[in-house]
Amino acid sequence: QVQLVQSGAEVKKSGASVKVSCKASGYTFTSYHITWVRQAPGQGLEWMGWVSTYNGNTNYAQKLQGRVTMTTDTSTSTAYLELRSLRSDDTAVYYCTRRYCSPGTCYYDYWGQGTLVTVSS
Amino acid sequence: DIVMTQTPLSSPVTLGQPASISCRSSQSLIHSDGNIHLSWFQQRPGQPPRLLIYRISKRFSGVPDRFSGSGAGTDFTLKISRVEAEDVGVYYCMQATQFPHTFGQGTKLEIK
Image (cartoon, rainbow over all chains, first blue to last red; front, side, top):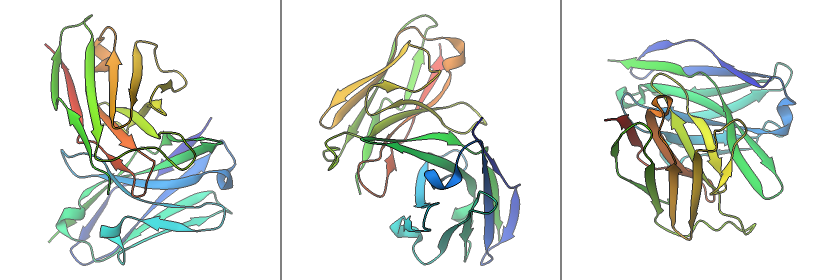
């Protein structure tokens, strides 16, 4: 069965960096993009960007440009999200999700369990 | 960016009664492929989002048929025909027609 398993919770200081992993199993990793979505405490969902598991191409949300890097390691079927220069408003649960696409249809079908990143001053 | 606006933000419903959530996009969601990539997600407390509906009205695998989606242009609706206790949570619409993909603010469904 398809699973996305994320790394554990992190506590970081303002200005530091964090790297969250998302290990996929149960399907061919390179067939579907991975997207990252975050959710601040008590807030809604925010799309952060995606990474192609096929060729490493990325598309980031404008507000995160320059601070975010999404990568993959196809040898371990793992996607990574790195966020730098952390601020208090980066405190959130970070989710990876698979973007399933077939002709004329794309959707986010499977989600990781989430990784809480807490940024303290 | 396309803004997705949901109404209501909170919906108290009696068990067994229907519920309806609206979602309006700030611009057309017609993709270059001719389709509208509008999805609905349910998020139960402490859980990741769960896909319910994609491409306006297509129910995802395993989703009960009491959930249905409809709409066109810039106005979309998620309906629950008879609310059950397990339906409590927050519901989000999301457009995946144009980058960045964007979500509505969420609608909290609770039992009266």
